[in-house]
Image (tube, rainbow, N blue to C red):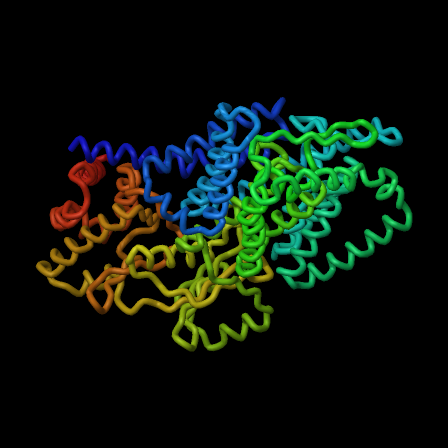
Length: 618
């Protein structure tokens, strides 16, 4: 009994951390630089809400580590860190600083946390990014207005509000969110979202220009070209034309904005760095080595202003191999999985980071700061998406956008199965497949970020992974009016309600006992089917059970807590016939079947729920 209570408690802790704390932590990581007073506060946010919770999650379920190690990006990162830690053996500096080992660990927690979050709550990624981008937009607009009011020739916008205190470093974060709005403009199918995103993109671009930094302009160009390459639609072609015209106008009317600051000593810095690299080209100078570059004018700098040169200096060619593999693999995954828009976002952010890293940065591993937006956050996002897709929690099927006439032709000769005041909801097509339509939701709601048709398809795939029969998905559609649809092959069989109506009392008892066992299996596997009732459960031809209408469902990381089980039962009691069969006439058979799978405590809670609602006035 004590062991079961311990397991129940650990499951509740795991669910709370992965479903609630990690999303908050990711949002704080992405947005906190815009409103915290200094980077140390950002560090505490990340450690407390993301890194430490992720470490605790891995301790609670070590088997999650196995899933992480199946991802090439994670393996390459671990190889990179392992070599970096090995390199301290030949370091000329003391190696007693604990941060040497904490920093790689915290960075690894970013990869692990994204893998867990995107497996168990990938539906929150779009709202999190949108919220962070909205915060960045509002703060950037305020900073831009203040900068314009006090502008004098030669001024560069530093950042203003928040912990952003350097024009170049601030521009990295501005560019990160500029890429996000560009991605939304290129991929969204909703006109209202486009009308909102286009001005947001213009504001973030103006903010970057106000910093006077040229590095993000190069990076934005590379990222825009990458998005156009992987998207290949009309908007991407229009973007390329706009990009060419904008560059031409800039060179024609304001060439000094590109040339007035010269090379910023970068060529001299790179030459000096290459000379230092040549001293130990294979193994590098070690992870914690100092780098001091003295320019001809006497200036002393500690970064080579190039990520690639920094990696070669600190960990040599051996460390450079896994590092460059991570970049190449991330872009490859973005290209290969471009049917999933989130991969386009991740790879576009990585392309931006690669472009910015050509002339900026140099440290290979650091605490959370602006440089994370160029490399580690995009790589961790791509690793998490890849892990979620491998574990079949992220939808693999592409979403089609048919022309109205083509979608209308698909419905020719269809038989209406279900409809409401707005029209048909479920159609049986001529080929025997079903077409389920979902009305457009407001773009800022969860249904706008994650359409119910995609939830239907994703839930069906996850149920199949759990060994629970559900409708096989054939096609997904995103329609021009903002609505969506899913075409699926119906499961052969009768609804459980129809089956019970046709049976005598003894056979009905046996079937209800089996249903109780099936319901317990759902709960033990973490399936919370909000619409669970006898009309949404099928008795298949082979005698097993299956689920239909699975859009309104969530699959939890652990067995359901007792309150969700009771809520499921309460929902079924709303249907008079279901209530009569399951909770009045044959409740003992239902409880017996449930107890054969579920824990005694869960069965007791089920009985309490039924008895409470059965009392007069309850």
